[in-house]
Length: 457
Image (cartoon, rainbow, N blue to C red; front, side):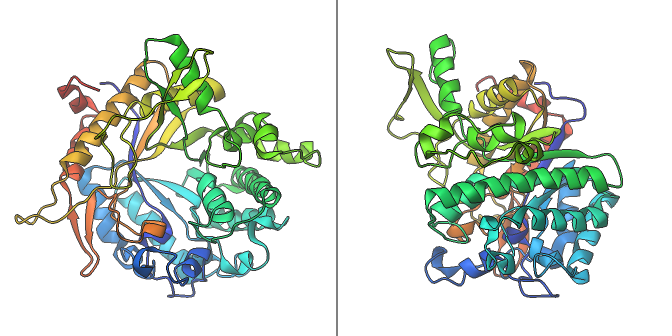
């Protein structure tokens, strides 16, 4: 199994899910702080006030990454921690935390990949309309400038936004995620356009003000389909068509969130699926949205399996009884890490980084004091073999980030789902590396060569 010599073997987290210190050192409120105060919105009314206490324990967490040989760490900045009002005065104590974290990573030869927005939108800006406000893209650009001025002397890998499908689709159209709104379709489309503009303005800001050369990406959900019969051209074509489809009334797709950024226009299907007729969208807006980026990050966990019907159109197949699912009830579909990167690379001709992939499992501490998670090891092994296959077939794959380094606050699921390769005892904040962490250490050390020890997918 071959991966590029400079492949980014990494782990990923997000600020609200691990930092805690939600009300300390001048941090402002986020929409997720407020969501957690809504009775019943989060599993057993859990919240992120302490989480993994990474704010106070980051050096311990960096030491764990160093011990595991991790080459790159994808983290996010808490917007309201550095700008409590969303814009305006910088919170020096909040920014000092990120200075120390980046310094610690650099001291341990771990490359930081910094995500500017991973869902913790400032509550003060939400009260001014949030993503619906036409000024929201300028607010995001101002925030980006603050972060770039502070950290770009030591950070050159940037990701603008994480999974707009979730923070818009699930947060503004459906109500599972913060801020928990159920907007009309026209308003959701307005917010989505402002989000894409925010991405473009952030890219412009990074390019203009970075203190060193930059590598800029974007990390939507890689929503996709895989062919039931990989040897049948009709099934492959059907899977490709399904991957770039838009279902009426659903924002959980890839093409609506990727085409504007990478091709410079909204997909034609959006007119049919959303009734999107936005003749007021200017060429200037689209030019900003299409500001060139260096890589496409995709967060891939699973995929639909399809075959071609008699007319050659995609037919989504049901899964056999007893199929393997994760603790999120998501199907395990390793070929997603072959066909996803392949389809996205074909369509957009841009390097691919898997910015999230991993498995929620029912982990526990065993009598020997260790956490044995063979299911996660098997999950990762199968998926990584497929990613290696994609690279071998010519896909420009540059990196892979496990979700997640730590068990953490899993949004509306609270602490009921464990994605980490490091177990967190939330009562004591003890960290225990799971078996999968030590297995991943071997993967990194051999640049994937140990994946050759088995022959199946």
